Length: 181
Ligand code: HEM
Image (tube, rainbow, N blue to C red; front, top):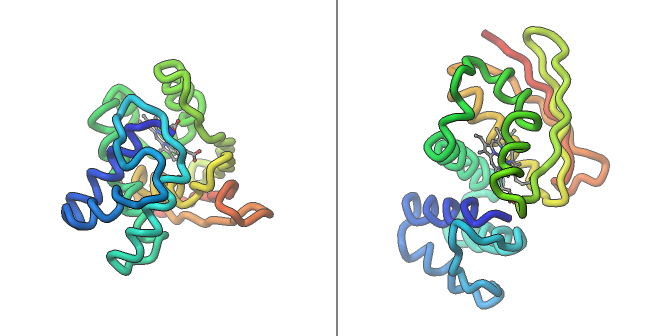
């Protein structure tokens, strides 16, 4: 997984929970990278899952809540680092519908070693968008958080209905988005 995602995760931990918690996470003996991540490297996502588990132990918040908070943070980073993806787009459905074709395809070109998830999108109507997420990583919660952050960014009220895939391991999920305003 791209180092940017790791370094942002650690940045969020330090900002929201302080240096001691950050230190506890990066000193976990089971981390092969010993918490020394750079934004240009590529790291196993299992290390992030271990740190999430430790973070849950350290601060007592449910893992899902922590990953949703991280998604919101990461969305803010994408906005800063890649403002070009937000130009000329004024609503979340156009933005999300273009993830595969406009955004992640370009990310793949910029970072050829990135392993991105698949999103199959179907625009059912003006007010309904269906997104099928699948990945070799169990990050459906992260996907949900990024979807929610997108609606927030465009100031829209969107109901997000999530159905987990058959394996229920976070590697696939269907998100049905219904615009309420
Ligand atoms: C400007 C916006 C975005 C940029 C620049 C971007 C870029 C990236 C990058 C660099 C990664 C890491 C790839 C790797 O680990 O090798 C990633 C992963 C991911 N992205 Fe995006 N992304 C954007 C928006 C979104 C949005 C809105 C969603 C949700 C619908 C999304 C869903 C995900 C998920 C779930 C992953 C984690 C990897 C996985 O599940 O397999 N991204 N993205």
